[in-house]
Length: 324
Image (cartoon, rainbow, N blue to C red; front, top):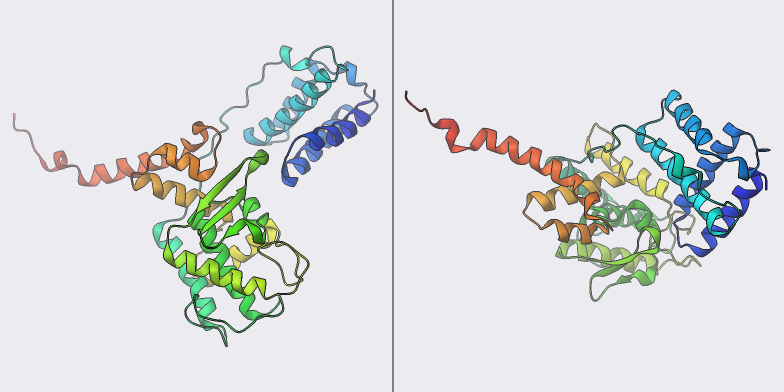
């Protein structure tokens, strides 16, 4: 079987039996296509060996890919090989002979300062208050928006998006995937469709956030569209992850925050602040939907840096002088 056919059948078979997000499938398609280009599409699947995999890894390093990107591409190829081992086409995975070093992969989460997150949320609220015909209180009764392109719907949607990202720490893909039925308004709970098909509940504990989310839901349900999405674009279709990123970028610019801000930075920020406020790491792990606590521990490093910084300024021993 040629590698080109093997990749096509793998993508069709693997993703039909595994609940994965579209972003994951797209990454696998891209990575395997890149591997096929490197080795040539006429190569037979049975000729894959450890030496070829190591040459590809070396090629990726030469092309200046980051360790994290190389790891992701190699993982996609490993899963591909394991699939054909299970199918009986490959007698064994070529990876058992491979030893690769990716260098330092871990990157510390990029977070917003308390001042920056306040400015971002405050700007989203100001946008709503400044809108002609919009109530100052997000919980008040708004005029029926009727169209998804109406100014009121866009401003209440944008406020709800930014507020939700920070309040729940959801991934941008999880927010985009929310349907109307996923917001249990009376319980103030969101049903989140997490990575790898793993679901969880996201609880809203702040009364202001509850008011904002209910106001958005009320506006959203008044719009006539066949889409089941909770957050929609001006055409009445599901708001994409890029659309959400654009919303955050627009509010960031108006708020006068100079550096680049992504939706994922809001997730990093709330996780870091929870740990700084003394929340148990296991609770933060559940809050973020991490399967492994190792992933959550990335945030403890940031929290420890903050702790050390405070101690260096405030520790009582700094004011003591021991006389000889």
